[in-house]
Image (cartoon, rainbow, N blue to C red):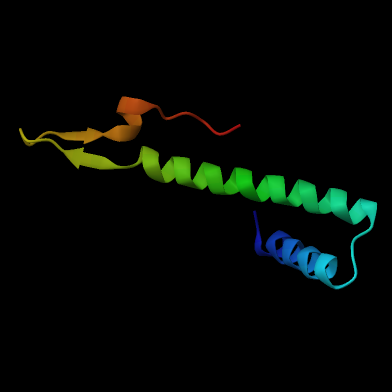
Length: 73
C-alpha cells in the first residue's frame, strides 16, 4: 500500500461525507479499503513472527517459528 492509494482512500472518504459517491467510486473505495486492511494485517503478522523471547534457561526462542509464520494471502 503506497501513499497515493492511502490519499485516494482519504479523498473518497471526504467526498462521501460532503456530497456522496457514485457507484464506481463506492466500489473503488471498497477495493482500496480491503487492500489497506490486508496490508496492515500482513505487516502485523510479520512483526509478530519476528519476536524473540529469552527463556529462563537463557535460550532464545523465536515465536514466529514456534507458533506459525503463516503467510498472508
